[in-house]
Image 1 (cartoon, rainbow over the protein chains, first blue to last red):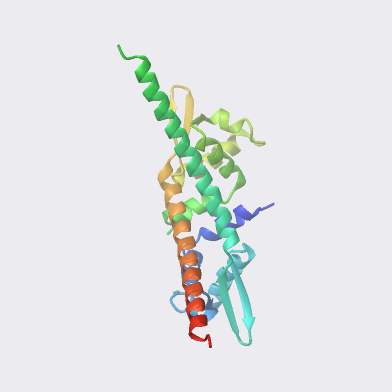
Image 2 (cartoon, each protein chain N blue to C red; image 1 turned 60 degrees about the vertical axis):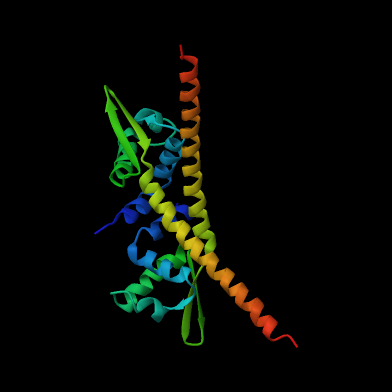
Length: 110
Length: 110
């Protein structure tokens, strides 16, 4: 069973989907606004949007004839939290190692 | 062509590979240390390690008969940087919107 982090990282593993997120981080956009700078057909763009929606990174809402897309920040926060926690643990370990090596050095001084 | 971020996010989109990174964030480990808590065969673990190595999240080094694995922080930093930048843009936009709505409110006060 895929969990939320699986979905999020899978969705982010594609340059077109990251380009869409980069655009939406600057504000909501219609599907045609999103498609304009992308060198692909509208159905291809819609397919990428469907992946972003099913991974809950993006929410789309149809008002009249225009489908507007916006970032849903919760999924991005979860991924950010996971990476930040690993970095923090890794750096904490380096600090502990440095402290250990410093005090070990002190102990062995003549 | 897959780029570094594609590889990194793809590698992180799997719970076993994230479990390996979680373990290695606390310090280097041998392949058998990594395999012990995982409910899968050694070849399956090695396959996940190969993905982590080819995405440059993990480096392995064979010393004598023991293969030791450790985190290579650069790829994780790149992914962290990408997500943090999107969050920052998104929050900056919300701040601008709030400022705009506040000053627009001031302008329309009687």
